Image (tube, rainbow over all chains, first blue to last red; front, side, top):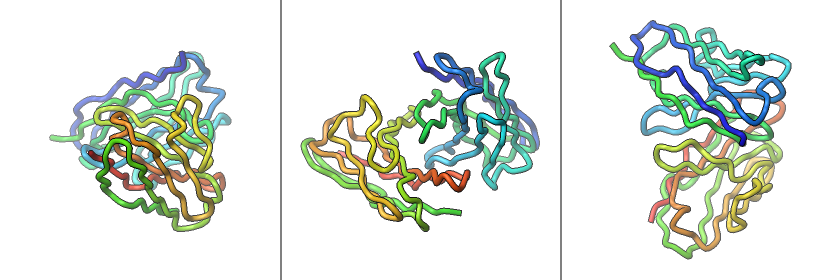
Length: 115
Length: 108
C-alpha cells in the first residue's frame, strides 16, 4: 500500500527549530518529486517546498532561507528542517507525492510556534 | 506569482443537487490545474488533475473542465459524503511555485 507518515511536530518557541520527517511505503521517495504543504488553523492550504527527483529544491517565499527540504533514500524518508520559526508558521504540515498533482498525502503533523 | 481565485467561498446545496465551483488563474496555466477535496481533520484528497482527468477511484459524478485561466469543478447528484471543502491548485510546469485557491466550503 502506498502511504506517507509524518512525524516530528510539536510545540516550539519563536526562533526555535524543528525537523519534520515523512516516511514512505509502497514507493521510493528518491524516484519522485516530493513536497510539503501546510495549513494554518482554520485556513486554506499553502504550498511550502518541493524537491525534484534530481534534488533540485524550491521554496515558497514565506519560508525561503529558513526551511530546508531534503531526503534520505536509504530510509525512504523526506525531511523538512525548519529554523527561525515564527508564530505564523503554526500549522498542520503535510507531505505529499507530486506525480502530476499531489496524489498521495500523509496524515499531517501539527507544529505550534508559541512562547 | 500566479494567483488562484475560487468562487464561491461557501456553497449551500442539498443531496441530489448539481453544483459548480469556479477557479480563475491570474495568468495562463494551460491545463495544469488540480482539484482536491478535504474533510475536517483529514488530509486533502486529489480528485482531478490536468484540469479534467479524474483520479482512479474517484466517482464519475465529479468532473472538471477548462483551460488557460478559467476552470470549473462540477459535482452531479450530490451525495452526503460530498459535503466538504474543495480546493483548486495550479501546478504550471514552468513555475515550481504551486498555488492553491482559497477553498470552497460545500455545506448542506
